[in-house]
Image (cartoon, rainbow, N blue to C red):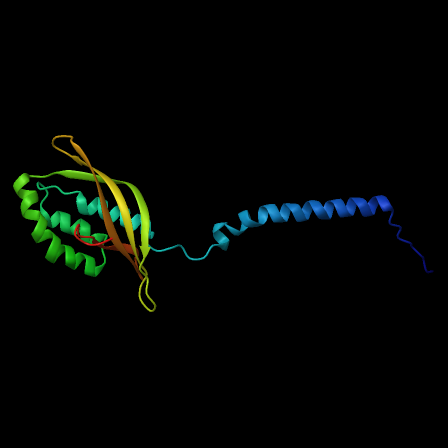
Amino acid sequence: MKSNKDIVITPRQIVIGLLLFLGLALTAFSLGPKIAKLPIFAGPAPIGMTAEAAARTGAEVFFSVDAKLGQEAWLSKVCEISTTNGCQLTTKVFAPMMWPSIEQKALRMSCKVTSAVLSKDLTKENAPAAQSWKLTSTCTNLDTGETSNGNTTVFVSDTADAGWKLERIAFDQEPE
């Protein structure tokens, strides 16, 4: 025996189906970006610091000196957050120029960057990314508690294996 079964769809069922479809579509559009940000959908984590973080950290480490700890301790910290060229420049140019005065005055300074603004993107074709940042910082003398504010320009470079790093602090005489 053969049975004939008819499926009957009422207008009410069509309206309910359309409303359910619209609700699911709206939910997908609103949750889609959040789902895409979940770690399972993310690419590899970025390596190292961002350009701004490298500029801020570079200036803070470079200007935070402690004559009691000595030049080697300071150079070690600076070189840790610098590119190879930046470390060599600090070791061969900045340290011999600055450190005698730091030791003579027995300076102990702690500096914090209070603002950072991208000055220029210096990236050239077929070269690592490079940027200059204008920074404002406040330095505190650890012995006297005196504070001083200053502005400086910092150059940072992107490295393939360690993210952005300090390239160098600009000389005061350099044009902007």
